Image (cartoon, rainbow, N blue to C red):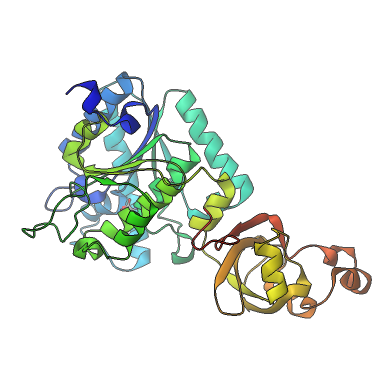
Amino acid sequence: MTDQGRRPEVRDAARIVVKIGSSSLTTAAGGLDPHRVQRLADVLAASRSAGVELVLVSSGAIAAGLVPLRLPRRPRDLATQQAAASVGQGMLMARYTQAFGQHAITVGQVLLTAEDVVRRAHYRNAQRTLYRLLALGVLPVVNENDTVATEEIRFGDNDRLAALVAHLVRADLLLLLSDVDGLYDAKPGRPAARRVEEVADVDQLRSIQLGKAGTAGLGTGGMATKVEAAGIATGAGIPVVLAAADQAAAALAGEPVGTLFRPTGARPTSRLFWLAHASTPRGRLQLDPGAVQAVVDRRSSLLPAGITAVEGSFTAGDPVDLVAGNGEIVARGLVNFDAAELPELLGCHTTDLASRLGPAYAREVVHRDDLVLLRPAGRGGRST
Ligand code: GLU
């Protein structure tokens, strides 16, 4: 293929996050397939030799744990999933270590939970580790830390994790590999179904997300999470290619396989991006109209005076949603008080609180630096 036919987004990418799903790494019986792992390693090694920095986000821990635990299928309950992941993650890494070892590439395991990376110190920590691994020539292999991720703090699916990691390492491209060869405009397999070669902008993406483009297959095969992940990455300025695992080499060569999602937004501030997309809110603060205006239009901190009600049980430092009178979530932020402390502060001015309860109570409930708008001033949709 001539250089001209190649996708510039791929050709010019110096750092790529590649995500592969369990079904592309396992045998029909459900165990890890060493040949498929090796094939992936061979393809990625070729990209590395061409000078591309890579981060691999790999599922497969739970799948790998099924055989040694004699589990016939993926368990439904969280505790058994966690046990399977505990057994399988080591096996998965052993396979990658061996497969990339054939190419003299060292791999490093990075396990993340959503909670870990939303908090400022942890976020920087994860970023620093990944940067250092890349600087040392290591190929980081990322997965969710399934063994400790409870329902409240988990990413849930690795597509979203991969989009967030792409942002974290400032990748130039996110490649999502799965068992389908792209996004279809109708359920794949139907005679009329055609592969969408390119998703150009937010409107097209939105119509796909809403199912208006006739994407009947969205609910199946995990396509919805892939489109959502593509939305997160492209919204952060990172192009995405969605392709089948056996097209990995062609996709990395920039050939027009799969579906290309063009970037639609600018890169937002890192931590706030995570706050918006990776955190699970632990509670809700109801705002009066003045507070909504202050937070949304003037980008001010949230003070106790503007809060009318508190829901949920959270502690200081947790993410909470800020909700307008009509129920719309307008922002998410890290709260500076425990839920139990707030009721007696509501509606009070900070100067009164300081004189009544002491200077520590004069602080903002959510500081503007710890706040991300989900309804930007004067616009619909998310700001990040
Ligand atoms: N973290 C899970 C695993 O490694 C997979 C999650 C996903 O595939 O989205 O088994």
